[in-house]
Image (tube, rainbow over all chains, first blue to last red; front, side):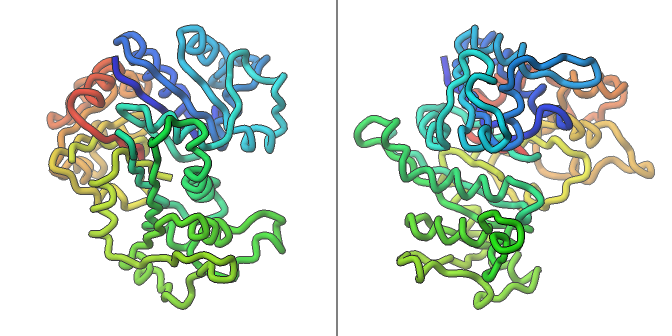
Length: 119
Length: 136
Length: 98
């Protein structure tokens, strides 16, 4: 088993990068790897609970909760998240909150890092 | 491995995108990462500014006065203050007409480090020597 | 250095990719990056495909855009998400996302 840490910075709606990230994470899990996900910048909209899945828009809540159920560690950037008005009770259950050093610490223990910057 | 080397590539211009700022602040967070690591484990970021990212390396930015947000200049200076190596691509500075005297230093904050203007070949070496590469 | 680069846009607004050098370079076309593998703008294949690299394109993202394997340039291998996982762990030691 190897470890993949993903940093995701793109918004849930208006970018399909989180959709890519969910599918890649699933594929990595299926192959027996461990996955960590750091959520930062505009990607923090991923962790909001009570998302309504309108078919015109990507949704983050269900796939994120499913990954957490399967043992993926997901952590949101506290500053980025609070800056966007999302409080801890508003988050998908199981999402961790921490500062940017969480990402660097996970990177330290990872075999591969996929840092998905961009908007 | 005790020390993990990270190459932070800042490639986007400042302000419209949050990414260049996040690149700098994530690099700065190496200062406190030890609380989450085992003894002897370290993370060493090197900040490399390339392409339009060099547009953020101009002094006298007035983002705080005009928009009430921390300037990219301030984040660059904070990188220097926490002893990060900040390498800026010489060719890209020349391409955009930015001379070294237009760039900030953090002497007023008490930093020992200064921005290092280097040919792209030096940045390629940083990428090659890094364990992981992060493009912002 | 064995470097895999994800290209997720068709029109890149940065020239980072042109500069990156690696002993072994893999370019994985995803999202709108798959157009590099499928479009012939004014009859010509994408200049990206002239790079000295091994090219891959994500099948899901090709099909999402109404394209099929017949549209994919012969120099590009079509891959699944699972294939990408194997590539990044087995064939390359660093990954970049552009």
